[in-house]
Amino acid sequence: MVNVLMIGCGGIAGLRHIPALSANPDACVYGFFDGAPGRAAATAEKYGGKAYGSLEEALADPAIDAAVVCTPTKSHCALTVQALEAGKHVLCEKPMAASAEDARMMIAASEKAGKKLMISHNQRRYEPHIKAKELLERGEIGRLLTYRTFLGIKGPEYASVDGVNNAYFSRALSGRGVMSDVGSHRVDLMHYIVGSRYKRVLSYTPTLAKCKPDGTPIEVDDNSMSIVEMESGVVGLIVTSWTSMSGNDRLTQLFGAEGVITLYREDHPVVVEYVDGTVAYYDFPSNPAQSETLLTDIDALFIRCIEDDTDPFVTGEDGLEVVLTLDAIEESNRTGTWAEVRRR
Image (cartoon, rainbow, N blue to C red):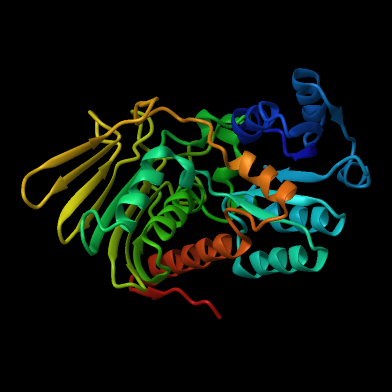
């Protein structure tokens, strides 16, 4: 049994991690800490468990084995390093960090402590994405040439416990906007599915609609569009948005020399159209609408890597790859030109 501490008790903890861990027979949501007064106590009352008055108190408790960090991005590094140095395994929400320097500090702290560090890039575990990776790896559409992938939501204010005052709209707390919050999902996913790192990007990340309570534009981007070139030669288009007002938009298409794979088409979650005109359809026991957000087994994989002493499913290095690519996206938007993904 792995006893888990929730660091941050906002929307992402309540909607994803707490329900997933509570349903896992090998895990116990043992305690809660949140910097907002009363939030940890309210969460403990709702789900059961112990509310801690300080993070130091929580991390000093020998009953705690692991922590899940569900706080604004800029706090990920400090909280993760503190938990690792206290001897706790860590599952950190995406994106891993606000800078490559912070991400490398987290990796170094994990290695020094000998504790697991896993990043919660959960979209790798959606069934259509798992099937797409399998189809590509067996050469179902021949050599992959290009892809285009979209991920849009109405905005974090619709899920955050803080509404329009959410941390995602603050550069001081989040570091970046939709390209980080939503874009990190797709940057990691396409790296994983395609099996190649990013080489360079050409990006535009405007603020088009989102405003603060006083009506002024938010401090970060609310839309992001990037042409990406991967080290394998595959070229892609990644579009992410906080202004998809109809709900989630998660369509992905992969174009190969011998066919096209479409994910989350309206009629089937995976469709393969071959160059000879034939079509294959793939369905699953549950075929949710494109707009429906589901729990994944990312928390279960974290618990399993602790119990089995195996490498995390999404490593710190995977998380760093995302941060480095986000750095390039930000540079390209600033300069208006292609930006290389700089790994050193």
